[in-house]
Length: 126
Image (cartoon, rainbow, N blue to C red; front, top):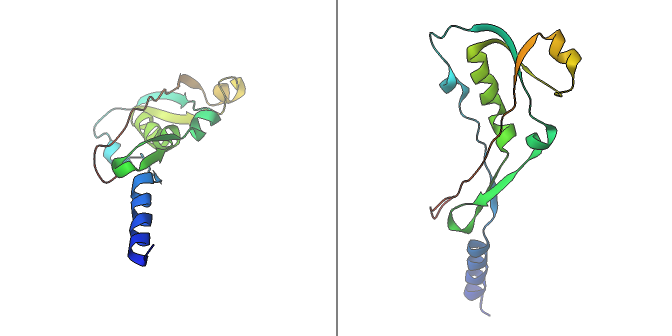
């Protein structure tokens, strides 16, 4: 096989097989600022399990590529920021069974997010 045909075959193989690109879903936190909202004087918490934080999703991207992201880990800063816009104190709760942590921080409500993903791309580029 000559040099040009060999390189063309390799290029075609790379295009067809694609690869997985890591992306981050965290929005710019300043876009989540709330101007003029009165804060509720409550201490709240949110709980994301270590298994959810580590969960990685891989979905089809454009051009045969795949896109990988960690929905809970990527969106945690946005969740904390959004809660801090509403409540005076926000804590990451290490465990729902950790009563000492919950009581010592006077946590009134605990939010447990559930994120469902269903993403893909029709674009030729990811």
